[in-house]
Image 1 (cartoon, rainbow, N blue to C red):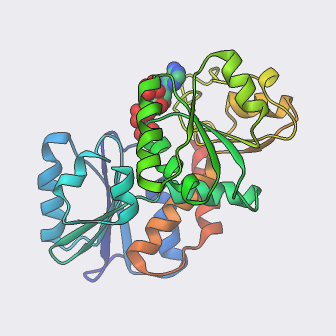
Image 2: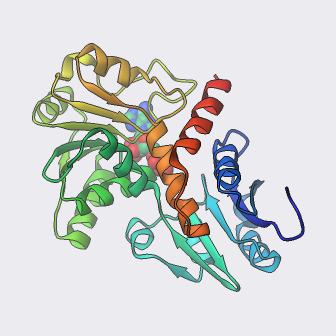
Length: 285
Ligand code: ATR
């Protein structure tokens, strides 16, 4: 029950109406009988600074940050954890009195989702599609896990600068691949895992995919971070090729679970979060 002692965690972004996080996080708070509530607030770019100050003034305990504020929010925070600093983006904030500290749980969420299917990703050859915010987080986390990473992005200058940044910060530089069919084909042939971290295939453009079945093989595991829909065209193509598939639900749940643990200090009830998120995604179909 919401009372005068209930602690608030906020979601800030724009748009936020379709976010799954409120139902997923509230289900987790209920499951552990924690006196917390998770609410979403539509915040424009112009109001971001005020929103952070307001959260501190009101004693709000933490937040998730989503599109388009993940990078812009950094200058309004008092501290950054090491991972968020490397990535240059924040999706989670913990507020302690007058101090707001930024974290990023996207990369660790993706790695946990991947590890549910592939036990040991050390030395696995991975081709990552994308070089945007989500891809940056995933690329750093995979490199920290000693995966052998290749990156391919539509705008090649972005994959090149991401690769050199990862090289400078971790000592291991991913290889950059163009998005020409021939180059992709060779890279996929040599890969154990293919991850789509672009928005290609997301509703309403559900017929789109960056890779078709004929470029894949049956020893490949294909993961898509798109969760709307859960069965993307990419994953359908992967199945046609006999590859294993991992849909976007796992990353959604694990990034949320990592945020939950930052705010509450408690182990997240992963299975309740997964069931609630899945049900909610099925309803918006
Ligand atoms: P997010 O924070 O969700 O990662 P983003 O930073 O806007 O969002 O990144 C979107 C990613 O999807 C980028 O890698 C983008 O490629 P570009 O860097 O070339 O823009 C990729 N992307 C989006 N639409 C695409 C398309 N039609 N074909 C190929 N890549 C696409």
